[in-house]
Amino acid sequence: MPALPFSRDLFLLGTHVAGLAHYQVESVRDALVEGLPLLLQREPGNEHDALAIEVLTQGRTKLGYVPTNRNPVLARLMDAGKLLTTEVVSIGIW
Image 1 (cartoon, rainbow, N blue to C red):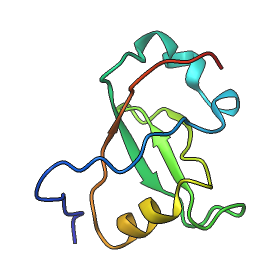
Image 2 (spheres, one colour):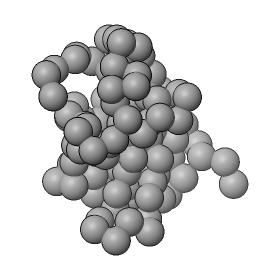
Image 3 (cartoon, helix red, strand yellow):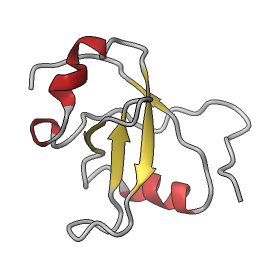
């Protein structure tokens, strides 16, 4: 069954992306601009966090993860079939 969107946009939370230094952010750094849509993808087999959510570019470049202290509600919504969207709001120094 495909993921279902909410009937209207709903802001759930703002957060940073954890683990940027460990993934491919440098290869897409210049393309990361405010308003850029990103993908959220569950990674239930993650050995460190069963509620892990990857943050990816539209081209599927892995940037990192939603921080573990921020992912429980989002992971459960995604597991229930909800389609969550996100975008770059600001670019910080990493």
